Amino acid sequence: MTECNQETFAFTAHFSRRVEAGFTGGQVSSDGGALLLRQTDRKINLLGRLVGCFSDKRDPDLIEHELSEMLSQRIYGLALGYEDLNDHEQLRLDPLFGVLSGKRELDAPLAGKSTLNRLELIDRSSRYHKIGYSAEAIDRLLGDLFIESHATVPAEIVLDLDATDIPLYGHQPGRFFHGYFDSYCYLPLYIFAGDQLLCARLRPANQDAAAGSVSEVRRIVEQLRQKWPEVKIVLRADSGFCREELMSWCEQNHVDYVFGLARNRRLAKIIGAQMQQARVTHLSTGKAARVFTEFDYRTKKSWSCSRRVVAKAEYLDKGENPRFVVTSFSPGQWAAQDLYEKCYCARGEMENRIKEQMCLFADRLSTDEMKGNQLRLYFSALAYSLIEALRRLALKGTEWAQAQVDTIRLKLFKIGAIIRVSVRRVVLQMSSAYPWKNIYAAAFHALRC
Image 1 (tube, rainbow, N blue to C red):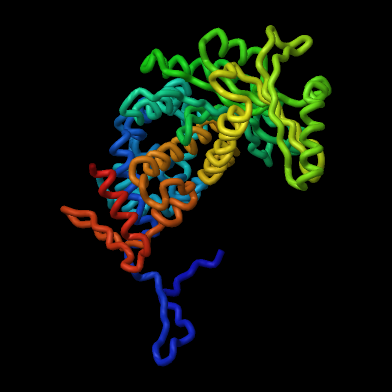
Image 2 (image 1 turned 180 degrees about the vertical axis):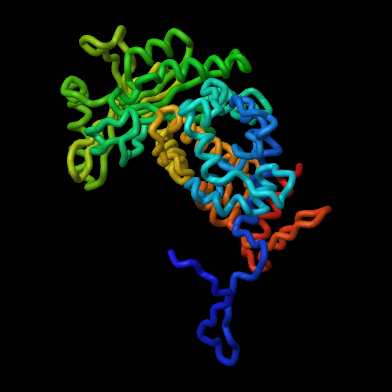
């Protein structure tokens, strides 16, 4: 690419005024709002504890970039929309990123792409890759963040489980073709409690959607009950998780569940009368018609016992649309229609949370090591946890209280600012034309309380 040495650019005049531009403004950042994210981390101490999840075998006398700085640099970069390590070749010179990363000497550059690359390529060679991480410690950190977000014992915790696809375009390890998604992909497992992320587990696609879910749920439930022994816990997931192993574990450990149940001819026959009733109602009104019913059901081979199934017999313009869920709740706890519409259908909100992971580049899993790709998935999950904490602590009561990650990034973080660094101060002179000063001020004061 041709190197640009031109300093000023003359554009078409504006009436009698000349219009000129140039790269002469000094230290200017487009991420002036990122200090709110830094203040959020001071509240929850995510990055400070994350360092303890890593082992650093580098010679202390030869270290130029501290592990804490590199981790902060990487996670703040994802939160602010910088998906590639190549972006840090310029960001490493940004004094604002130096402040975010905890760099004492702001005149010194941060880690470049090669150093950050060695952080992510785990166990490649003993000479160049001396930093490792503990997946167990990071998993526990995600659980601790959730527990600490509650000032009192919650009445109920609903854990939403789901699997999603991350398409692959190279020859990464664990690369398999998945027929449902019609692509080569990974199939990570996510577990959320409301908006908060408790598990991001990378898995190859040559297995069932529920594979490994029992061990992940067991780990999370044990951690929650160490803090709150009597808390009520509910699992909620689609039919991909309706498996005997998971349901029987829940029943043995006093965990309730609501899972989708895939339709079959036996189930369709059981609700035949209700489906006919819905069809007659639809033909008479011309509108979608629903009839709810429930019954005890047991599969011929896979289930160990009979379980309560709630069915929705629905008839639409396009024809029959039956749906089924299996649950441990009794009719006295949840009536059939409320169980389906208010309890089970609420799990659809989790899909928005998974989309937010992609806004934080959880799909950038291009290393040739499974452990390295898991680390990248963790980085995206931790960046999400940081922004979710800001949304929960600083934006509550504002019009952005339910805003998604990319909206918060665009409207709250991307503020043009001139940066002035002196011996005593770091000053950001942000754009006077910024249109959401009131929300910025509200978020600042909420984080200072």
